[in-house]
Length: 185
Image (tube, rainbow, N blue to C red; front, side, top):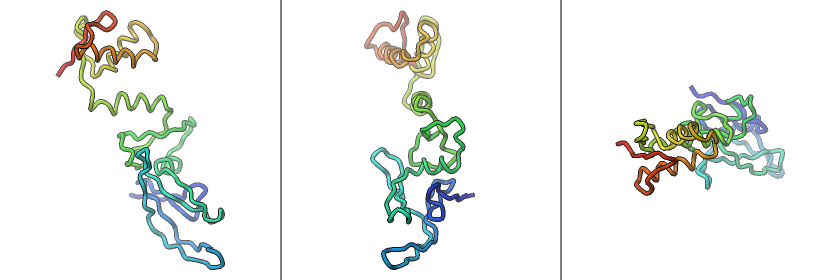
């Protein structure tokens, strides 16, 4: 069921729904010396250069100044509590155009990077095997995590280790930190 709530700072003018739609409400707007009736309607959304949906909202008390707003931010700010004061919004399924409330969550930039690395890139990842230990990992990143915990305990090394493991698995290098690796079908 679609639930509509007022958009903060645009109360009485615009509402956002839990399904990611934005609507303009019925109201009378003053244009110059005349009053004009604005009829309730769903606002058209546009994709910005970063691939997110935007809408243009107007505030009557600011001389009809246009405000570009990202839809996922409007949905999140209206429907999702942000008790930890995180400042980025993550699309759980990786689709920037899916702004339904259950697809959004507040994240830190670091949490978003991990989400993209481990969840969204799974489609592109291949299983990798450590020959010396006969261990199979879901991805080079999971193998790099294991290798990092075994030898380094430094989060910054995980990406470097993952690149090294992929290079060995592709045959570009012979070993990565004393271990041989190969891709599993």
